[in-house]
Amino acid sequence: MSRITHMFEEVKEQADLLTQGAKDIEQQVKDLVAKYPTLKKTNKIFIVGCGDSYYAGIACQQLLYKYLGISVEVYQALEFSRYAYETCDENSVVLAVSNSGMVARTVECALRAKEMGALALGITSNKQSPLAQMSRDIIEIKIPPVVGLVPGTRSYAGSMVSLAIFGFVLAEALGRISEAGKEEALAYLGKVGTIMRDTVENNFDQISKYVNEYVGPGKEVSIYHVLGSGPNYATAQFGTMKLLEAAGFESIPQGIEEWAHSQYFVTHKGSHVIFILPKGRAYDRALEVMQAVKVVDGKVIVIAEEDDEEVKKYANFVWTIKGESIREEFTPFVYAVPLEILSFLMAKALNKNPMDFDEKPWKKAENFRQIFKSNIVSMEKLEQ
Image (cartoon, rainbow, N blue to C red; front, side, top):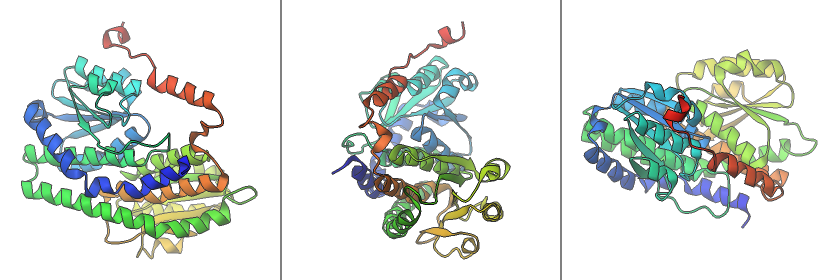
């Protein structure tokens, strides 16, 4: 089995984290709430990470705020560890997210939180990692080990599940929701997992047909613009990362509004613009922007609900989410799936290996040096 095939196996299996893994994470968070009184006094939550871990924080920001009703700020790890930490105090909780637990900048965030007197909690699948050692405690994402190095999808879902359940359990502890409200949220997460699984099955063939027609030497698509707003701005970022990692294909993540102020001016026949579009707060604006794509001869791809007739007026292609309408704050779990499938199929069509590491091992060595072996700087040294 090739490494890119392992990616698709992960895409199919990630829904299990929502339908089967939730109870374990719930118990871990309950134990943390009992162990650390700070959690019941917190007035600000910071979510920090790099790459997919950072995007998971953006994806869950609205959800956590809705359930907790307190400030939730999301930062790239460098921005927090070198700048934003100054607004952190003993009543803050810092959720440092890294699947590997090896990312130096995220470990530095946990150190900075401790230096500021905040509660640093790592979210990781590696309980022996530097992040686990630096944090006061961890939420362990229990996912099977990856065979080889592949573009992560299961780890992204695991990070989002952990953040969501942290929010549900803490909301109950703070009296923001009842026990019944927490159980409803957990049950709804499981329902979303079922829709995730169905979305893989429902989209594979139609995305395959699209890739066969438009992807490859001499074919039309030359660049993707991937657009989302609110929690799905994270989905745009994550989808772009998968296209880059799996297929080495150029794409630009952008907010729906900002595309109209920027990439509109460089959109052309080879530009395919993907709208991540649940029926949420940015829906009406996206319909307006779609029309602008067509004016400059780009093609419109929309990820939307199956019965959404309005988007079909403007879209060249619609990749559908079947089933009931999903609450917008939960949509990142599902709306990322068609982009994962696209990335996998493009890698196969272009005969690419993930991250180009097999052909250029020196790139892997340098990448790991930058990310895992970077110097961790104390606050004292930083502020000299």
